[in-house]
Length: 335
Ligand code: TYM
Image 1 (spheres, rainbow, N blue to C red):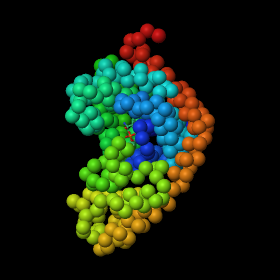
Image 2: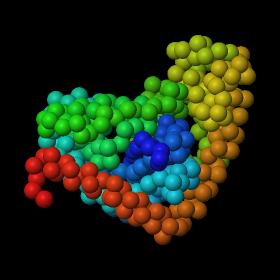
Image 3: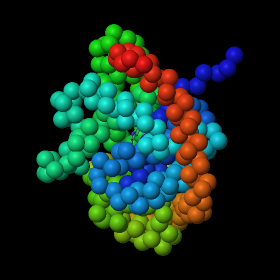
Image 4: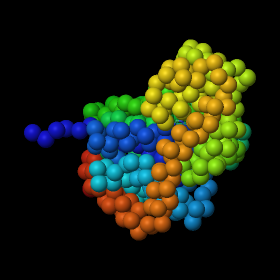
């Protein structure tokens, strides 16, 4: 009997550098899960253009993100890696979901409010319906689990609402209700400059994040400059409460060294941050250095990366086509 593997789908935008937040919050988990689940990972270029992207930069970033995923340990022989626009079913199912989702649901999406800012009238319509496209990405493969950072949780709740409404509107039991897979301590890696803000590739301050393309000196400098408070490191986890910057650095240290936060606190408890930061910089370089190097090497192998994305798209297309065909049938489209 063949073993039934459940399916995961996840995506990352090619709209800037991959950050330590992407790595510790999502990609690292994808690497761990890729052999447990049937895995589909997508470079979501259709999502990226909800905000203006220079075409040449978008092409390069798409390849760079794909190279980054492979360099982090995603194995193209084991799972599917592709870019979204090569599988037209994403845009097509998104349209159907635009007709299922309600305005009121989208009006509640906090990420739209954050990204559109004060000037909502001038945001693209694509940015507003972005969560419908994200739901379509997942449902196009009837994926059951989605490993993401905590910032995507609300979008996954919307995905469940859309799936449920589709099923009930058409009287079918077709789309599954997805489960988010969010890592406990690194589901939300915070900015190095502000413990209340998420580490983000769109933060105007370069010092707020570590990019997977940063060299050794840049990483060391950013960690040295990372904001902390004036108290010493506490010797247990409860001592980190109310100290978001310290907590973030301890969480990053724990994740990169595969240790419990409690043990890091025990080791550095009572000290100031200088020695800890020095060790964190070294640890970061030792984990990220080989990834950066491999990413650079792959970025020079454009043909290889393009081939991975093309083959991935063909495999993704083969899984999604019969699903989309059934959706057409359920909705009442002649075929
Ligand atoms: P994106 O490109 O912003 O981020 C990719 C993944 O990285 C996670 N992440 C973080 N995790 C922890 N701490 C952080 N500071 C941090 N920053 C980013 C994100 O949560 C995400 O998991 N909408 C998605 C892309 C997408 C998608 C999908 C994801 C499109 N379709 C379908 C899952 C399923 C996004 O903008 O991710």
